[in-house]
Each structure stands twice: as C-alpha cells, then as structure tokens.
Length: 278
Length: 303
Image 1 (cartoon, rainbow over the protein chains, first blue to last red):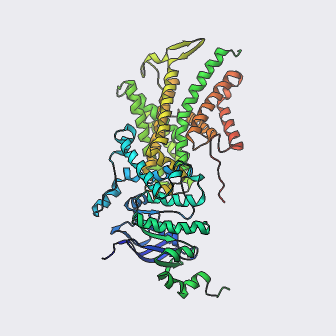
Image 2 (image 1 turned 30 degrees about the horizontal axis):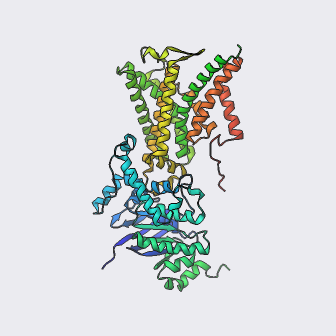
C-alpha cells in the first residue's frame, strides 16, 4: 500500500535580505516516518522548522501538508491542521502548572473555526469541539462540560507520558529531563499528525538520552505520528532515525539511511571541514 | 487641624475610594504591558471616552442611567479592541519604540477627536441629570459621614476586580492570556489565536478603564477631553509601584497610591497643592530602587 505523503517541501527558499538561510529545499515525509535533520550550526535547520510551522513565510516555494497548501498560513492555523513542535531551548510556560501547559495546547479545539473549515474542505475530520466558546465561557452555558472534557483529555495524555504525578506542579519546578518531556507532551496535546522536535536531547545526560530515544519511538507508535527531528547527538540520530537529511549553508548536501549518510564524504567534510582552513 | 480617629477614618474611606479608581485603570495598563510589553498611553483617553459615552447615553439617547453606564463600558471595550486592531496590530513585529510612539499618537488623536466631536467645554456629570440624587446622600456611620456613592463605587470596583481575577485564572481564554504573557510566539505555535486573545485583553482592560471613568466622573463630575490625562498617568504610576505586568500588583499599587495621596493631604495640609508631585516622586523612587515594583517578577538580564 502506498503511504500517504504527510509533508512535502517543494523548492523552498527562505531569504533574509542577502542571506539565503534555506535554498531550494525539497523534502518528502511519508506517514509514520522518523526522519533526522542534521547539519553544522547555522546550516538552516531551525529555519526549516520555522518555515514549516508558519513563523516565516518562505520567499519561494511551497509547503504542502497532507495535500493542503499551508504556505503563508498563520502559525495557529498550521497547528490546528496538525503540525506541532518543540524548541531548542525549552520554552514552557514556566509560571503555569504542568496541566495548564497542556491545556493551552487544547485551546484551538474550542475556537479555531477558520482552520477547521480548511480541514473539512480537504476531507479531514473537524477538530473543533464546541461552538460559541467565548460567550459560553462567560455565561457558563455548557462550558463546564467542554472544560471537563479538555481536562479529562489532558489527564489521559499526562498519564500516557507518565507525568500525571506532577500535573499540578509549576512547570519551571520540574527537573530538566521532565521539562523536555513536558514540552513534547504539550506539543502532543495539539493532536498533531506531524511532530517537529528541535534538539530534544540537548543538555541531557546519557541515561536521560537513552530514555528519550525510547520515548520518541513510543509516542510515534502510540500517537500514530510522523516525526522530523533536529539533533546534534549522533547517537540519537543514528539510533532512531530511519532516514537522515543533511544540510549545510541552507542546502541539502546528502540524504539517505544512517549508514549511507555516515559514509558520505560530503557530510564528513561539512562537519570537519575540507582541511583547507586547518 | 488635629488628627482625630473619626477624621482618620474619614480619610481612610476617601483613600480607599481613590485607590479603587486608580486600581481599575491601572489594571488595564498592567494587562496590556503584561502581554505586549507595551505601555498603552491611550488608556487614559479610553477612560475619558467611556465617560463621554455614558454622558451622551443619558443626555442624548435618554437611556436610563444604569443602562447608559453599561453601554458606555461595552463601548469603551470595543474602542480598546479597535485601537489594538488599527494602531498596534500592524506593529506587532516592529521595534517596541514604534508601538510606544504610536500609543502616544493614539492618545493625542483621541483627545483631539474628543475636542472636535464633543467640544472643549467641560460637561457636568452630576445628579440628578445623569444619575439619581440618591447617590449623593450622606450616610452616618458612627462619627463618620460617607456618601452612598462611595459604597457604590467600592462595590462596583470590587465586583469588577473579582470578575477579572476569575476570568484570568479560571477560564481558558485567561489561561491563553497568561501563556501569551510568558511567550507569545510559543503560544501561537500551540495553536492559540494570539491576535484575538490580545484584542480581547485590550477590550477588557479598556472596559475597566471605561468603568473607572464613569465612577470617576460620579465622584469628580467634570467631563472634558483632557480628563483622562492625570488619572491615566497616576494609574500608570500605580501599575509601576505594584509591578507592571501583574494584575494583583496593579490593584495593590492603585490602593497604595490613592491612600498615600489622601493621607498626605490629610496629615500635611500645607502641602496639599503638591499632591500630584508626590505621585511622581514616588514613581522616581520606585524606578530607582525597585524598578520591578512590589509584586513584579525580577527582570532577568538576557546576556
């Protein structure tokens, strides 16, 4: 059976003034794939994430998600359509509880009607659970039911990712590894089809990294996800990714299975230099 | 004049009253600053506009006073929402100084607009034309005489503040506001329609300013296009004292500033004329020694 193409980047170029951060970038992600995006610092990896999630509108090219052209849509639409992400440096809502962090991610299910229409137009299930959330929230008509359902779903999610015990702790009070996990849980709460992880193992010790790799594989299967991840830790990339894309200076210089990429002289050169500077 | 207990209590009541009004206006400053790091200098003019809406609601559209007040508060809320849409939203990604200058421009625009539309001659916001005479009756409690209006203003202020706290901490949209105040880009990426939530924040802050304006005019019944200027600045000072960005801080700062002003005049009547200057002296002292305010979070220096 042919697998669905979840994400297609078609000749994407992102230019900032004279600087081409990403140039002529093509990429296809099939349903259920776990793909690594690697490259030296400043290669443009995070820019690719920012283009996919709508923070930047690409100068040229198209971003197609499940057959929907999402180029230039605002970030909250794109999230509603089913793309979620985490960040290189943890960006939780520190003053809010673990539970509230997850609940914020469900907000769009109450109100995002415009993006919901796009979903329905392309034949997908609508995600918005209730209508008139604003007045309901003020006048309390049927609101508690919606709210309770959200909280129940959040509890289930926290159960699955084993954060239930900490549900009412302040997010900033969690240990580092847990915060990383919560960031992933918060992304999962938006009910994504595609999950973008930006250096999930950054700052973790080897033991935590080990657990994280298991965790990523587990959520891919449990939540039926396609995952694209940026990572510098080669153990993680080589250990869990089925396919790897290597970038340098905004362009793809190599792609293939971990073994193929590892032995590609261009990749070695990008990471270690060609010797001319030495 | 010797300070006796009744006189002290009398001043206490006045201080709480003035403080409550400052608090109502300060909350709007603080909410907007909390999510956008923008000092909305047009806030004081929304306060003025709300008062005019109420004035004309009664005198021109002949609404009953309470209905006119409610309509005016809603009108101020809508005005706040529009100000955000028209003036601030296009500058969301611009340097912060651009928004600040726009805010000052917006303030001057609203004042001039009020002069053109409503005229520069002060209007009287006094009973029985605007609201029933009942409110100006005096109530004797022990040896203290308090206007019924005082209780009305305090009651409404308390109700609005309770509503706001409930809204911000117990509803989904309040949660989205708190998330935005931590990290606007991340909140958008979690699927929240950030512009809508910011618009609603402006609407609520402005509605509170509108309510503050009406209550202010009931106490000081002189409505003119520049009436928002001084209360706006004072409320801003109150927000800074309490810790700008924090709703509780704005309330605390408002009550503190109101109390200090009244007590100062009561204890040092010779300096009564310097009342406004003291507010600014307090601002300078706070900015020098505790710029984050009493309840404000410590500002982290990003390196």
